[in-house]
Image 1 (cartoon, rainbow, N blue to C red):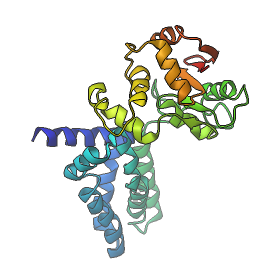
Image 2 (image 1 turned 180 degrees about the horizontal axis):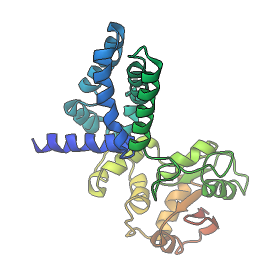
Image 3 (image 1 turned 60 degrees about the horizontal axis):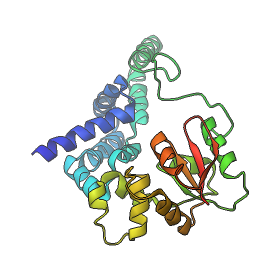
Length: 272
């Protein structure tokens, strides 16, 4: 029962994340009710059918628990919520409501009320909150300036498809610059995120030398001599290490590796 409650709480948190804690979410169930009463038979089959499917799958705490346990989706579960035809359902229901009357005046009044309701419940994208979920693009690539700066540093030596030791940052970075290779695959990174160091070190399918690198970089276990770590990453043909913490910087400074360049939050260490 405790696990079920945790799964339900996770579902609620995912929905809040999906909507950005936006109270406009309440219009979705209201829209389904309107479609049930005002829509045609085909409308009910389509929109209510989708909702029933959602309840049996992505809204089902038992199914979600299996997904989390087997695949380790974690917060990435939110991506599944694109299945919800959220705004389409609301828009279609409000259209039915507006055109439910044949009188033009009533339609205009109903449309005005709907508009006020949406504006009141919604949250403006670029104003209205101190920390809004979207930011205006500062360049043509729609990524942060720091990503561009990192790319300039990484490619400054002209290495073809350099191999990088990095955390989840590389998942975002590769959206702009796919011409880099990650030392750790997405699959291994997912295992690291949901596994303690003790359990990860017991995995038999992962090589011992890789476990040592992971222990230092991802679990911040600096008990391994820095020179041995340098030898391991060099032997793994890693070209650069991206550091985001002063502790890792201090650890790497005990080797002959050096900082090739840095941005506001990251240092790019050259593996030699």
